[in-house]
Image (cartoon, rainbow, N blue to C red; front, side, top):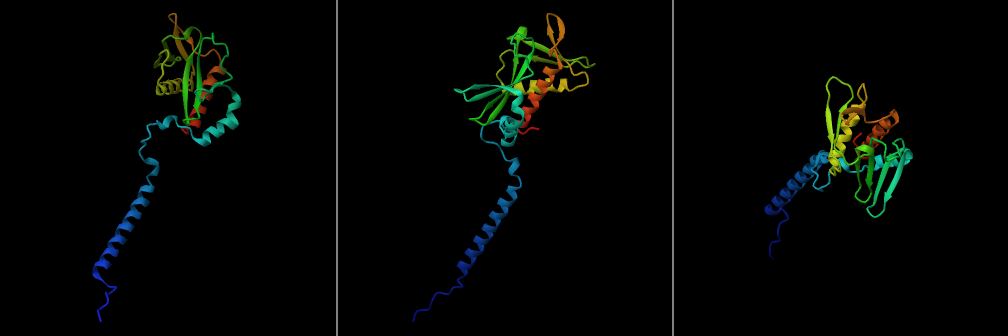
Length: 201
């Protein structure tokens, strides 16, 4: 009678041992990498700076949107939000800050829009009356969203300083960019609401 194959074959035991080692090593690697999930590389091609966070957008829609005028561009699937404290009159000399939401791509952008005499002109701004006069140049029809965000942050930072004024060079004179407190607050509220929508605040 032929001898039955033993269940204690050394090659099978070695194979099971290797499978166990590789299985446990794989689980350990997955567990370790899960701790770094928030720091993974973004290969989507989208800048996360402008990605909408659901909680931020819900807060904006439910609480803050009441303070904004809304314009919808259905063909482009865009919603443009302008704070109600900004002047409606487009001939008023100032700079307006809009929030543009693209729900289709789940992105939001800031857009600095010059009005009145400043429309389609290069603008030189400075921060109030501080001892160190920082300057900023706004170019007409700038389309880079990162540039709009950086310029808005700079103006917002200047408005939060002690003097809290931003001046624009017009006809060789430095004039206030915002005529009243309402426009200043509208600018700061718009900037802060954008940062909440994108989870930066």
